[in-house]
Length: 403
Image (cartoon, rainbow, N blue to C red; front, side, top):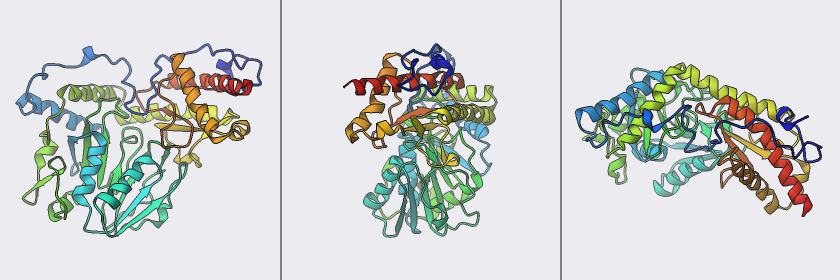
């Protein structure tokens, strides 16, 4: 049986080296920056604002359009604020940490690289005295039941480098006294977020929307605004982190007046992506596509004798940054350096075939593959990719066995 029809072909199979018949229409499966929306072309971008000031009436209108379309697609509560801020999701997270933390103790949750970075910032840069760190290894979540919501809580919704997500918001207390600060960059527009449980949410356009880098989004609840206006951080605040002046919110940030100069070309690209999202049914359409991508991977994993999801529980497996580990006993018997070389070589082979670009696992994660399944990726491309993973693994296995 050709590999295109059998997802469970191994290196010992007679068809192990027959290339699949189907090819993904696009080989772009990078987890960031991510694939552009289907049919994207630079010709689709409105360039009238280029060369104009972002402070002009027209420039501000374009910024406001991003904000308004984003709010509508996300079904954001009327009293929540959404603003464009510098330095991608990283800048938005840092802005939240530096501006809001300090009045209460903090519970920091980490189970992958970016969550660990936020822990380091809070412990070593802000040097807060009352910090509890709750960590878990790749593939697992910390004990969510141990979180104290009298304290502030910082966590990622989806661990981009581990492919592990929180299953829902049920673990978050509705009567919390502290703030919940959520890095949602690889979750928003792809997973349902319970806005009533989240006080600060950050993301960037370069993930599920397939936008360009450089700008982040910060979303604030009324509770977060109250904290901003009542709390004066004990440390100097860089200009790009400042959201208040004279103890009052700089509300222009949430009406299209950015802290520093934005790229208006990137703004136009974001508008294009948001219009596409509206055309496919808004949030429901985006969720449907990511869920289908995950479903195709799950069907393939259920038949595979060499691959498994890095997430230890199905309910915590990401439908965007879908991470695969190698579980073939033969592979696990190899020395550590050869185990690490396996997914790298698989990625090289698939790039050479122009089947899949940038799918080697994150540099700090366990050896494996990472396939982006966000809404801009066509489900048919994920389906077409999977037999090629079998072919590439069989090829690499044979190379190593041959010596």
